[in-house]
Image (cartoon, rainbow, N blue to C red; front, side, top):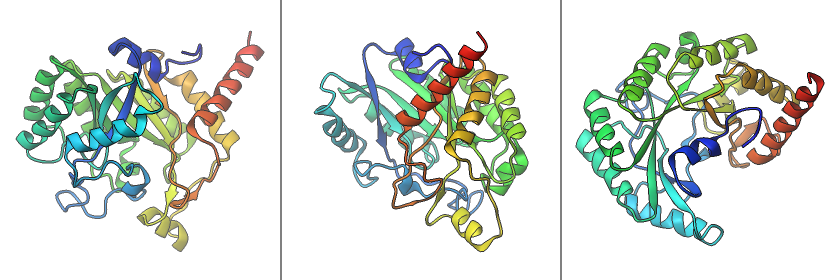
Length: 301
């Protein structure tokens, strides 16, 4: 816990006893902006290999992936319990009964304390949400929506194929069902000024969310964004570490105090990352940010 903002550990302590660790699960469900349902190619910045660990292979069952993930962490954290994190692509894009079978399989694993479902705001039908709300009465369920921005022009540019209004609808329905809701947001998307990013924070403050996850826009090999930047058809602002920390400080001051911040940065494997190459792990960036917040607090005391 720190004095400047509510961190994710504090949020987890409100819902779970003892330490918990996320383990990624890959269901193999593709995104509707990839399979032709809404579009093709997916988000322009996305290379799924950048955030899917080796143990989360879609050819393995949910239980097998969890077993491998627990084996990976067990040596370092023998007393840890785990959250099954349905992370890759769109984890609620598919047949409702088949999806629920996967979620129930994860929830039934002896090492699992709860499940976290990452998805898109346009992929949460009422039928599925109702069944997840029922599961939430027996085990802990958290849903995280990839919102990325509150600006529809940006969402169109990055090929999200959903609107901010759909995010508002999904968050409202999910919170009403009793399930804690999180949002994912990307800072530095093409065409977005700092003022636009802070306007997204203002829009987030108006929603009944429990957590938010920020990360810097990364240019990753093999993506449409990387090709567009190389060809000169799209430009993005490249933040230095200090510039990005200043942006994050502004966000901390702006964000509603009861919303827990999961993280400010994301790490892409070095062999895939083009920029920004800061050479910092997430915890190292957070340490620098907290140091800056402490300095600013001292200046205003």
